[in-house]
Image (cartoon, rainbow, N blue to C red):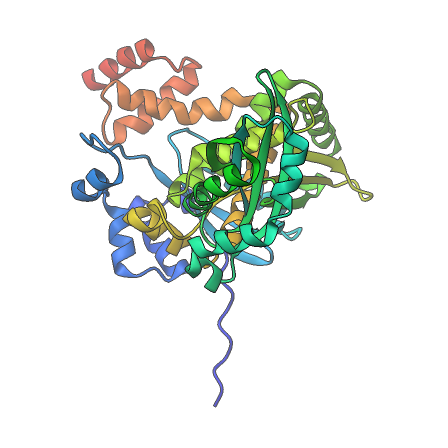
Length: 428
């Protein structure tokens, strides 16, 4: 007799934010099928062994723990997922949960990716005929391809390796330089080590072919061959009506027109993006550098997202940005909590990870614009921040919630007020 199909997992977990930490971990484990080892790793407040830490970086004296929250309500490409987010900032995780909830019934997030190509740059100085040098390098494409692939046979075996060659003549203050781009498919690796090795291996040959002097040999974090895209639609009645929708469009248009606003607008996107990148052991600085460089690619810094009104009056948002992330190498394999977070996500390729991160970035941007266009950022943010202030002044247990409620009621979320109110609480 055939087994009846199992019901699809649903990322809409009622009352998730009201559960205890242990209850949340149990719910996540049940949803994701996490093994006991991963659950135990997530339960450790200081979850990095000193021996591992000492081998990850130099001069280690300790570790710093960042809270990992889980974003619920996320439906990405038709599949419900729970998303780990590592961040110290109040309201970030809750914002993603709320944004995802409001577009869930409209299909959630649809994503795509342009590929897994990375760029290595080789800087050539001291050539009197840079245009001729450019052509001489291009003529050696087959030799360059063979040399690159010889650097990493395993990558080639996995379907990656050299894909293309670009050579540019770039004017600088010191004169024209020749810059060679090695375009490499790094598959499920972020790829920095692979492409840097190839660039260094090619340097002597480029010098021999051109008579110039190679200086820098390193990847570019403007990974514009590795773009992740996400889109979603929020029905107007799900977000507060046409007036809220139009206010959000006006907020987006502000960010698109003014770099001062765009910087904060894009920072909000990165609140979500960087939280997932960090939780999975990827390079937050590389992703952030690529995102901001991409936002300025036209010569003016602009929004990474676009927002429009659909024919039926819904709000449609899209995000496109470089996302060079991986599942092999670096902290993704070394850090046990990063490994547990990747298991939680259930992803098996770097492409899947990048797609989910893009969806989180779009959700974060929606949430930030909505709150700014309606009640303002401080109401919700300060409600959560009040708990932090309560802890800072020494509140424990039930005192934290009680004191936070007092601060919010007084609309004075300040340390001096918290100290005075805590003293009153303890006096009975």
